[in-house]
Length: 475
Image 1 (tube, rainbow, N blue to C red):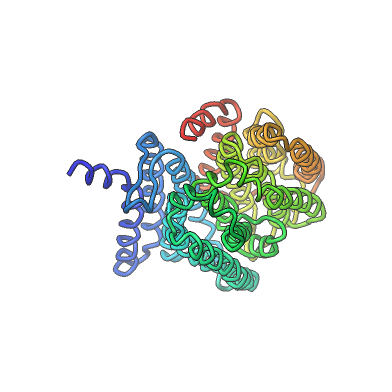
Image 2 (cartoon, one colour):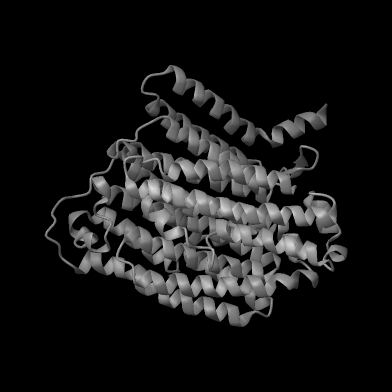
């Protein structure tokens, strides 16, 4: 009886989200103008679930016959998913009204995507990973095209669906090959027998296909081809969700379920693959971002570069690398959400004011908005004392400890390149004039979401040890 109660308590965050989805569907069916109600129901749900997850982080264990892990790193991921979703909902309230897409289904789909992410991060079985991945992915395909009157949104949704289905095929084939040799989908069992299994070509091929499939989900080179068009065409708050919580879920699958596979000499079989995609992702993303004139596309390519930085932690294959990735994901989530939140505020109807030149004179027209965006550009560039600096610092140190100093050097070079296109935004806002005199109009919910995100980035920069110590205590 006591075990049953403890097991129930450990999955309360999942129960809350799943229950609220059912309640939200009912509200949508029987309530007029449900979009207002569902927005605040979603925000409250995500905040409660996120806070509960982080306050019960010490209660580690497994449930559902060992198929789902709870507590520890899993709860840290659940916190990231839920708080980022709450911020996205705050940013969306006015945005979807602006585009004539103010429907209650929008918030139900976000709730569903978060449920999928939570299942991915806690999975201890390959089938559970696939289930969570599909729940999240299908919700993302719909969200990408939610501005149904926009051709670019429809294009983004279709591209995301087609390429996402292709990537899922890699994952399914990988799982099939792993099961064919291991005769189980339990990650704990596979990890225990990894030394014996690693001598089999089919098994290694399965693991490689699995990694390739998730390389698409985390937007790593050369599986990045969907990122610029999807990020540009999707509703701006949704783009923020894709680039933060979606990316965190992809890394969560690799970290929570497969990080142990990279311990020991056998795990180094995958180091060349991980190091290669890290290098190409960092350099390609940083160099191509310089040439972009659309701010959403610029952040899309920078997202590819940031995926490369985080993959360095996987290539390092040590606990500091894993801790560095999780810290990086937390900081990157709030940096990007604040940035896309400001873009959503500045953006006009029919996707106007998205060109970088349209930010000229913003420092004069709206000093607070410009200052907040400027701070996030410094943070994304990895300039101390912001959290972005420490995210890179931890993964670079992990690489050096793993005798991959050359990889850390490439990361530093990429970071130096990225300073140019991030600070370009600051230069345009403060040192270029514009004929536009219109001030960006924002609601209390939008500016509150941005300010909270900025504050979290600053706090993590001033006290990085608080989070990194919490993460390492579970590794």
